[in-house]
Length: 197
Image: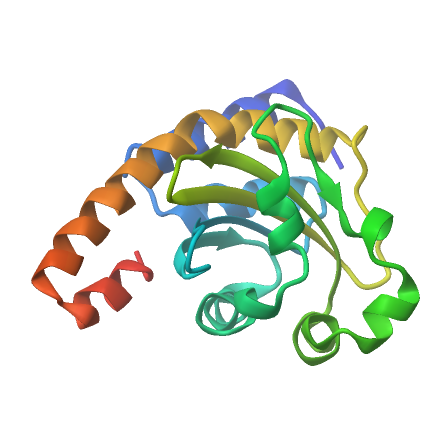
């Protein structure tokens, strides 16, 4: 991997462009995922009380179908979500699956056995970027099977967190406003379409 300064500048610029709505989030997150050899990188918005998914923006080799299946079904059984929601929002607060879930747990857990492992993923690291009374935005970084897990000292976790933290808040506020408007109008089809944006 080449960690040239101009690469960082370009990656950060794309993330800010996505936060401003000038480019698609996937276009912004793909280079970051590729640069740090991540199988998947996602911004995941969740309603804390109901655990309903609000949005997902992803990049990486895992692909769009993986993200949509996660959004529709598998986030509900993801064992990382509860512990990640318990994290603070301070910089450097991470949940790394290898520190919490041993191989015996992975061998019997439905999220790993039915979803993550069959699709090629393995190690997950989570940080809570933003939170208010109702919602949270999680940053999910995943490595593929056969790749080493991430750790607190990894440049990938530090860079991804710092680059994305500043722009995620605008997206959360926009989602919150749209969800409130659509809920008042009871327009469920529009609400589902919102998650695809």
